[in-house]
Image 1 (cartoon, helix red, strand yellow):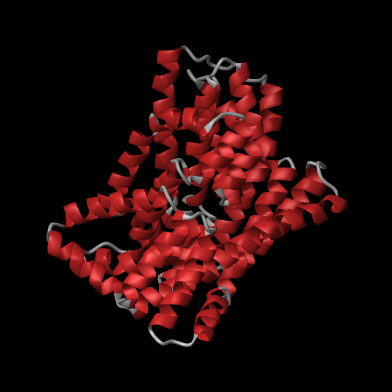
Image 2 (spheres, one colour):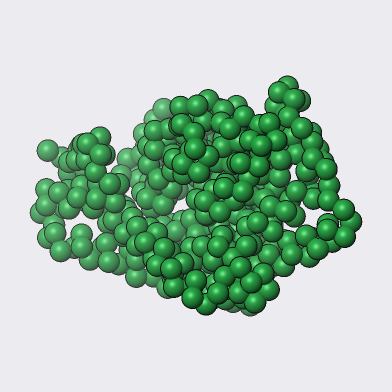
Length: 426
């Protein structure tokens, strides 16, 4: 068999039989290397080299910072702050869910951290106020996708490595406008759903309570300002920013909010390490898989394939978006970034799309994939937190997709939405 068919067939087979995605990537890479006569040791070296990068140190630290924020009361205070801002609108709690994800995503950089920390707060609160449990879960899952777009996103760091050294600062800045657009699209959709279903509006707390809630909320959001502002102005690197995020989150949780103690840090670290090990092994395996793809010149083949279908850049961009959404339905975000980036980036660059715009388009599409069956990680976690089934929640999530897809199309064809802030700061 041709090596490329060995790669595709073995990967597909292992994926279908239910082997964990990291093992699918590593095993298919190993079998393809053997078919090409390449020593298997090289595959192992590529897996190791895939995680031997200083910027990747930021990923475990951002994961740890998100865990500390979830346990240290930061998530709850962000929810309370969002409640003041949009609670009085029709369907206010649904909008609160969107706004708090916008804020918490900008602090933790993780969709799963958002669902896990604020889901147990928001979903029961919405159900108690008369919202359908499935819709409450669906809006929690959909709004959490802002966490992979609004900085500090560790998925942006993975893309920077896969793309060959794109500026992390520029990627972070590029995610702000599209991330906010996703939140606004979900809020507008929630508003009309609330009118149709008769969901209530909320009462704003008293002025004194609002002042205290705002103070606590701004302290929590200051983490995002320090992290992204420091990186954008060149005060420190993304790796250094992740360490600062951990220290700031621990400081707030222990000394200001006093919801955790030094003894609580050890189990938080242990829990974070489990997540980190999974993510880093995925990155390493996907790195070996990506190296095999590049060695077999798959990017050139894919570019020629798309150009053979049509030379119309609009149609090609639409096809790529459809492909990314379909891939996001069956694979997780991190491995897809490493696999897809070296394959599709040359295609879009040949048609005039910058790597920064492609990064945001990629993450927007994969964010939608987090909300879709059969392998949407966000959907799985959301259903677990919301105590409902995937089938029921998926139906409610479908109502939210049109607005999210509209944002994908706007970002795809209006590059200024992603390049404005990086160009402004540069």
